[in-house]
Length: 112
Image 1 (spheres, rainbow, N blue to C red):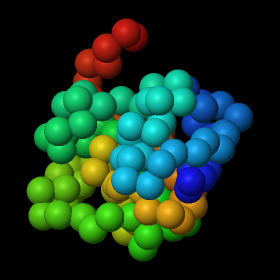
Image 2 (image 1 turned 180 degrees about the vertical axis):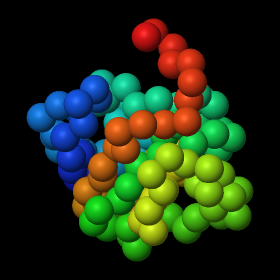
Image 3 (image 1 turned 90 degrees about the vertical axis):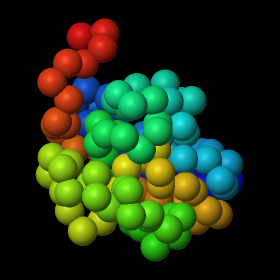
């Protein structure tokens, strides 16, 4: 099973951590299953950018990005060349390292 290394994020994962997930799982699903409550305002339907992550290692091992995801990413805060929507980034057998950006464009967060 691939390992997802999450770099420290003040709100979601202050110390950083490593989790495992099955190949074929989205990064967003894996994070949520391990108690890392990344925003996902559209319920993982590829309709927003709140689950945006930057893939620091293993970008090429993720499932291909489709045109809808590419278009949405143009609106993401802190967009970088290795950005993905975590709800659309499907794990293969390779490990990845991700960084959750400090901000999103979501103006109303649930439970906050």
